[in-house]
Structures are given as structure tokens and as C-alpha cells.
Length: 262
Image 1 (tube, rainbow, N blue to C red):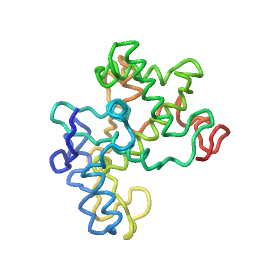
Image 2: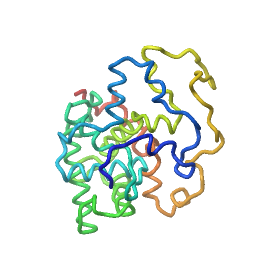
Image 3: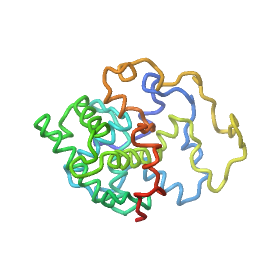
Image 4: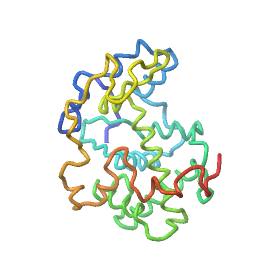
């Protein structure tokens, strides 16, 4: 996978085949003149590269990169560039920017990430004889699907549903905080300090554009994943949609029994 930095001017707008073209001409960075200095600096940091890896080891970073890309449906051919989710997660863990809680059946997030990445690598060696990052995309998806659908209450001495929750929460937070993804979904970006004036359903700010294909839902298109040929892709390749087995259930809420504030 490419180690180059994400350069929106080279990669946006996305082609219709890649899910782009829904908001033609929209670029959230055109609004940066309305942001304050701190907001502008934070967004540019996401666009122009994260700090050097500070938390993950080299093996952990390679594993996390592939794991997060599979969860969010990112694919990179030689020369392609993607949002560097692993670096964004690494920054959070290095700076202890957690969600403010963790399950009492799980270690703290930093320990849980190390343990779960080691565990998925162990599974990859057991099944394929190589590191998770060296497995092909189908093999990676199958390994992740095995965790998501694990039948016992422990996976490598960790609760699999809570591991899945950890991975998907961090993946979605990183993915949907990136300006390139905001362009893809038509999100207008930070409203501080200007704010919004057009409030309500189907209301748009002057700089926003309508969805060019409002009736075209990529998640409902026929395809191998949605036809059930490859359940792993179905489980891990839908950006922003966490499987019902691990999200939205009573045991996945921070204020339920089983969650510790950290």
C-alpha cells in the first residue's frame, strides 16, 4: 500500500465508480477562510499527513493499516492514495485521546489495541502462515469476519464483541473526520465561528450543493458482497455502518453496565 500523503487535488473528485460524483463541484476546503486558526490547523494536519508513528510498532502499524482499510472499505492499487487511518489512530493512542471509557471486560484502549493486533496476526499465521498485512484482501476480510461472528465469549482472552466495537469506533472516527470523506458525503465541515443559518430538513447553506444521485444508494446496489458471495466483505466493507451484532445493542453503550470511565 502507498505510503504517500493524501493530496485531495490529485484524487478528488472521486469517480462515480468509486462512489464520487454525488456532490459535483463541492470542496469543503473552499470554506477554510471562515474557520479560525486552530480549526484550520487541525484540518490541514489531517490533510497533509499525521506525525511520525509514536505508538504502534512497525508490525502493529502495518497490521492496523490493513485492518482499518478493510473495515472502512478502502482499497489501494499501486500508486493510489488513501486516508491514512492507522496514523490517525496512532496519534490518538499516543496522546491518550480515548472515548473516555472502556468496558470492564477489556483492557484500556492502548493495551486492547496492542493485544487485538497481536491476536489477529496470530490468527493470520495459524491460517495462512504469514502476517495479517501480507495476506490478500479476501483472506484479511475472512479473518475479520471470524472475529465479528466468533461463537465463544473469548477470542484470544478478549471479548470479541468488545474488540469489534473498539476497532469500528476508532475506524469510523478517523475516516469521517477527514476532509476528503466530507467531500464524498457532502458535509459542509466545521461551522465555527461562522455557524449555520439554514436549519431544517433539505436546507442547504449557499456553499453546499445537492446530491446529484439522491436515489442511488451504494449500499443497496447489487454486488458480490450484498449477494452473499463473500460475507466478510459484507461485514467489513461498508463504511460507517457497524454490524448489528456489535453496535446498537444494549451491551454496547458506554453508560450500560460493563463500561468503565477511563
